[in-house]
Amino acid sequence: MKKAYSWIFILVLLLSGGCSPFASGDKEEVKQAATDVEGMLREGPGKYGGDKYDEAKVKAELEQFPDNLSADEAYNRLIALLAEDYKPLVKQLDELNPEFQLSKAPEKRNTKGDAQAEDEEKPRRLNVEILLDASGSMAGRVSGGVKMDLARKAIRNFVSQLPEDARVALRVYGHKGSNQQKDKALSCKSTEVVYPLGAYDESSFQDSLNQFRPTGWTPLAAAMEQAKNDLKGNTGENVENIIYVVSDGIETCGGDPVKAAKELHRSKIQAIVNIIGFDVDDAGQRALKKVAEAGGGTYQTASSGTELNQAFQSNIDELLSEIHNEIDWGLWNTHNRLDFGLYKKSVIEKLVELTMLWNSGFPAAASRENDRLKEAMAELKEMGKLQSGIADLNGALAKKIDHRYQAIKKYYTERNEEISKKLDELEEKIDREISEKHREGTK
Image (tube, rainbow, N blue to C red; front, side):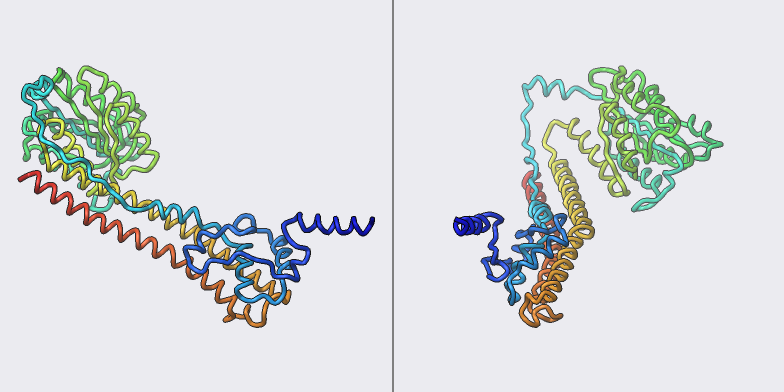
């Protein structure tokens, strides 16, 4: 009876625990480790890879390895035990496949007999007022030059492209005193119309842009409250009042710009308040976005002279699309190029993000994996589990571990270059398609 129980006990041991009690002496089947980098990156995580690593448990596992292991046998077992999980990063790279679809080409519309179109074609009076931040921080520099100089140029270019019958006004704020505490009261009261609402005159408008310099605080709310008076009386079904704020920061004079924007939008003049944040930090952008939303407008951001011009250009395009009731291939061209530029920027930002992940996480994982594999190899050598010489500096097992590390390091660089190349090729393709469609549409 005791003999029968002994056999039952041995059978239970064999069926439970997932391994043989003779594992240390026999070489059971172990999954073949990948030899190509794509496979290496997808075969993890190992039993004790990444955060699951436990030195004592790993050592106990190593002690169960058979004796006289070859380089291939030892490598396969070590990878099954210690491989890192690279799949999340690989997935992100796989998903980052540059693709872009052009918007539908415009079609010429026949509006004759269309009552709605006739109503849209009634004369419309467009009033545009620009509120320019002249606080001291606008004297700072960004890519392209001094912020105030870049803002002047962008505004001048913007108003020069407005419809001929549009009326323009320019108001500045924060242009008096200084940004020191002693001059705060004076600066916070400084908001002034330097170009009263009227037809655009290039020479006079240029003179108005040169009347001030960046110096003080930021009374944004006060400027918007005064803008309401600037546009007073301009009401009616076919009157459109649009305010564009150019600012590099938030309100600093204790005003409530959200309230001021909301009152502007809900008043009889029904002004739309659009804001372009110029070199604004994240907190400032969130605050200015709320102001634009309260004013029924949109918020755009720019960090250089080029981006500021692009922001104004997109507003010009939008104005023209609302005014003209016929095909505008130039607008389609500009929009698609601008949209692709934004798309390309987003892809590059994602690549930068992944590069940062590579520099902080991916190589750390690869280095950690490499160190653990080498430590385990040294343990196996000390235990006498390996064939002679394979764990030496130029031994077969050491070379396999080093090859894996170098292949994984090389992988990301090549993938990054591949995506960048695809993005450049896509840009050339999009440029050709836009140019061809534009030529066909304007014949």
